[in-house]
Length: 228
Image (cartoon, rainbow, N blue to C red; front, side, top):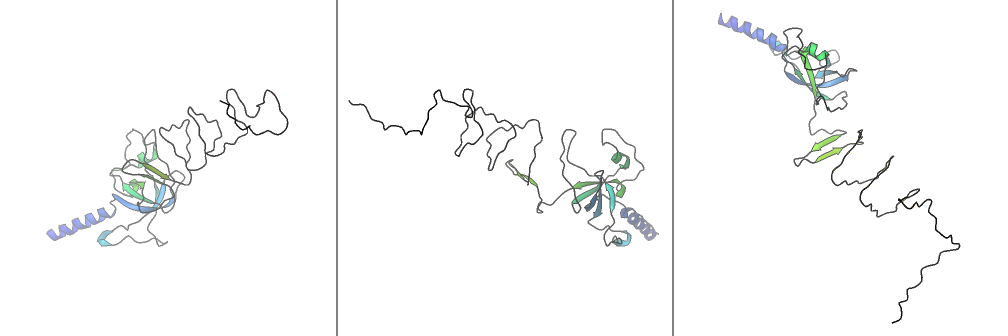
C-alpha cells in the first residue's frame, strides 16, 4: 500500500514538475515589432521519467513566442539598447498569472489573473544579460573609484543643455555649428585661422589704418642708446 502511494506521489510530482518553471537561460530567435522576443531555451527541460526534452523538426528546441522584455528604468529614465538574434536572456516565470498584466501599461493598477496558473511558459519575462568575458561593440564600465569609461564608435548627446563641471581634456578635433563663448583666456600653441576675428573695438576683416601707406614695409631701425 505504501509503495503504491509513493508511486502515485512520484507520478504526480513528475507530471507537475514537467511544466513547472522558475527561470532558465535562453537565446533570442527573433525580435518582434511590439518589442517582445521569441526565444529558444538554452537548457533542455527534464521531462517525466528523466527523459530529456526532444528537438523540434529543425533540430533545435521549441521556440517560445512573444516574451516581454524587462528593461532597467523608472518613470523618469530608462536605458535602451538593441536586441538581436543570438542575444542571451534570462527567462523568469511569475508565480502568478500575469497574462493580462503583460498586455497593459504596467502601471499601479491590479489586474485579475486569467487562471490560477503560474510558474509556466505562459508567464515568462525576459531579462537581457551578458557574461563579462564576452566582447561587445559598446562597453560602459565603472571601476571601484567611481571612474566611468565609455567605449563606443560614436556617442550622441541630445539635450537642451550639457553642463560639465571640472577640467575637460579632448584628444582630437572639436567642431561647432554655433557660437563659442569663454569667460577666461584662450591660448593656442598652433595657428588660429578664420575668415574674420573681431573684438568690441576691432575687426580684422574690416580693419583699416588712419593713413594708407604704399610700397614694401621696412624693417625696424636698430636701437641706438642715447649718449651719456
